Image (cartoon, rainbow, N blue to C red; front, side, top):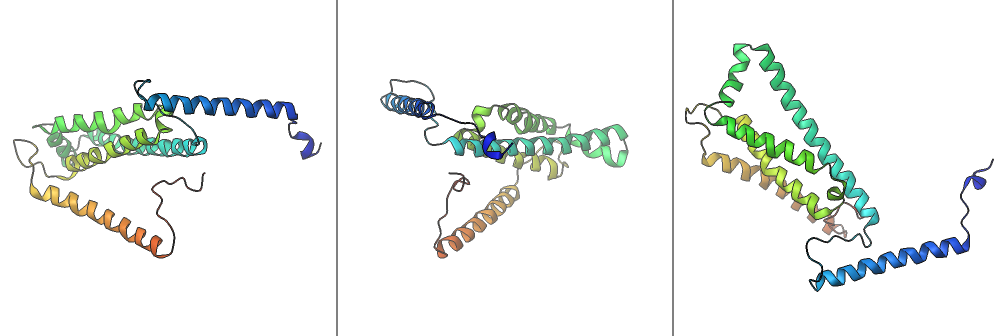
Length: 206
């Protein structure tokens, strides 16, 4: 059997019928957008008008973000479980301080909003295919990650619990400034080469 025979055959009438259905759906979306602009449709409205290929790539990016959340949490919890089960004074002391004196509330916030919340939210396929909603989750994870680093790195010497210091903000600004400077350098190189800096990673997909 040849490869040509394996291909499905569509008659001209069938293809015209499919085209009519596509046009009907596109017109329906355009009408929904018009009514939403006139505030005749309330709530949130997201249309996939011209975004079919884009949505698939954003879905993959959402899955990648979900994988990072799961792997990061797995590493942190497995380390905690091994050290807590071993119960060696030289190792368990770090967790004893981090789970008492006010630090336990910080750990609870990290567990809830750095893993549990984003994990169940990113299970939604519709959310991962919506760029703005996916971007909100990614932006939300940034301060949560910084909070986790604060809980993980800052010495727990004070009996009163976590204490804020100016150096914490300076370190955050320095790290963010470094990444922003790298982005500006890359953008200038692209513009100098006559290219464009597309804010979407999906230019090739469309």
